[in-house]
Image 1 (tube, one colour):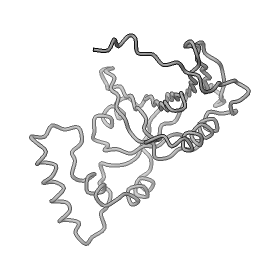
Image 2 (image 1 turned 60 degrees about the vertical axis):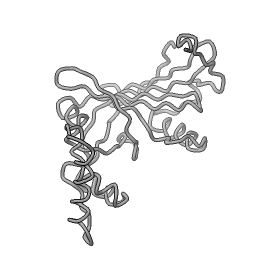
Image 3 (image 1 turned 120 degrees about the horizontal axis):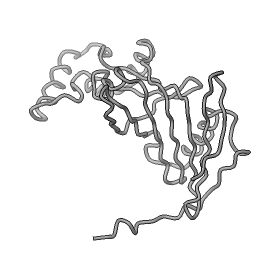
Image 4 (image 1 turned 90 degrees about the vertical axis):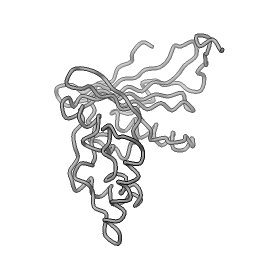
Length: 213
């Protein structure tokens, strides 16, 4: 068995200087996002979403980024899921992107809020029909006896919507994570990594600092 502690990778590709970063984190994310797209990273929009429930117990999972702008970062889910329940009781969340091909990581701390029904409808209507049926068929995060439950639910809703428009379930929609802190991490040799952090102050202005690796 390979010695886990001996697994090691030296980060050598790039640097991150304050002078090379944008004035705000959304513009900086846009720069790195475009470079990530051009690097042919598989599922470049995959991000870890960490939530905390009402009892302070954390939970994390991978979700997919579906949009971002100056207001924040958007993903979609079942509002009645584990993550939805956590956000309902504690909207403080964290997002993490890890683009290993670029030796980069982006960490986002912020507040998650449900987007409007109209915005959720627009994205839902762009999805494949099978994904729309899936949103109706899955009572996400609840215990089920076996896979047949989901398969039967899918068949039921396929028949119900046959020849009709598949509307968005009321329990399914989007969240936007409004950032208060964004960290850009660039791997460097000898574990002396570059870490540039943007923090939102009380005047709604971004302050940019460097952190020790």
